[in-house]
Image (tube, helix red, strand yellow):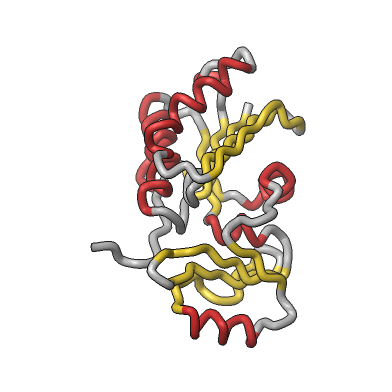
Length: 188
């Protein structure tokens, strides 16, 4: 059994998958208090499907960039579970790459304060290193890659379709110490 978790960008996204079938999913938008609801929501989703957390062998997570607290929520839950049961497998993919899917795309996430996290991808291959830019720099990147799709703030993102498409692109992390957030800008 697999569980996809995305808590990075003011949403709580859960996708439960067994073999090649989606069993259930839940997307809660504008979850400013994702840290307060994530664990109980996961438990409810599992219970609704007659499952317990121990039934999940594989956890798939986006690890940022995004909301500073949001990025840590999913990672902390899964790190704790891996500490208690080292047999579970943890797979990570950054939020920008997830949003880009397999497209030729400029992936943009609001970093607040008139800043933007960006990644430019062609079939999941990063063409520039993920970074944070201001509006002027973003406009320059859009001009440079004018033939690329613009994917912004997970608008119109079909999480289930994207997870199914990218599942093989998530990176397996063997050690707890490798379950790390992707922070691009410094916080005070």
